[in-house]
Figure: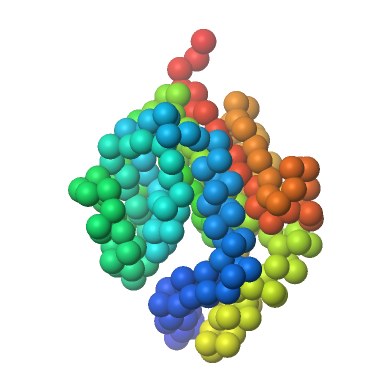
Length: 234
C-alpha cells in the first residue's frame, strides 16, 4: 500500500510539471479551459470590489488572469507546493505585493471565520472526498454577504467525456502519464451530486453553464455557481 501511495504521489508530481502544457498547449484545449475561467468571472465587472479574495486549489495560477474586479489582497492557495512554485514564477510580477501564495488543504483551512469577501474554487470540488464538509468550511471563512464562486466540470456527462479524449488525455498520455488512472483517483465526485449539494446549501445563488445556456450536464462542459453567503438571520 505504501508503494502504491508513493507511486501515486510521484505521478501527481509529474503531472504538476506538465499541467499547463497538458491543458493549454493545443488551441482547442486552451480555448476550452480559458472559457471555464471566463465563465467564472463573467458575473463580475471592474466596478466590483472584493477587498480580500481566497482562491482554493489555485494550481499554477491561471485563473488570476481572468479576474476583472478590484481587490486589495488575493491569496492563491493549493495543497501542492510544486504547483504554487510554478504560480509564483508566473505571477510574481503581477499585482505587486497584493498576492500571497499559501499551502492549504481545500477541506480544512487555517483561516479564521469571516476572513474573506470572496472565495473562488475552479476545478476543485470534484477532487475532494467529502465535498459537503468542504463547502461548509469554505462558507465559514467567507464574510456574511460575501460571494462563493464554484466552477465544476460536468464529469461524467457525455460532452465532457468526449472532450476529455480529444484534449488533455491525449497530451498527458503522449508524455507517459497514466491519465485515466489519475482522473479515476482525482475526480471522485460526480457533477450532478455536487450541484445538488450546492443548491441545498445556497438557496440564494446564480448559476451558469457553458457552452450552452441550457441546464444540461450532458450538453455542457462546465457549471458555475455564485452563492451569496448568508450568516445573519432576518
